[in-house]
Amino acid sequence: MLLNIFNLSFAIVFVLFLPGFVITSLLITNNWRFSIEKACLSFALSISAVPILIYTANKLIHISLTWLTVSVMITVIIIISIVVKQFVLKKSLKK
Image (cartoon, rainbow, N blue to C red; front, side):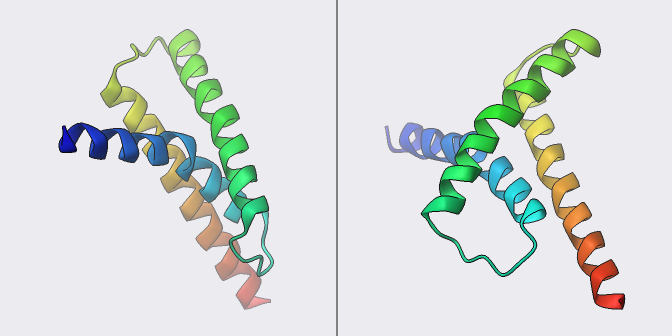
């Protein structure tokens, strides 16, 4: 029972919040602290980005949808966003 609650809470954060939060931090470059607006924007971006990615991968690349492939796709979104954010930060610090 406790493990199911942990899995559900981790899945909600991983699917419905984290991808949007990383994309939001990539798009908003100023020192915008964590607030309710950023949380709502993160939630909205996650709800829109994750299904689009999954649908595109399923229809164009013909990847079967399992929990593993969906987790990998979400992880790839997060990693790419973090790498781009670090690249932009390094480039802006050099100027």
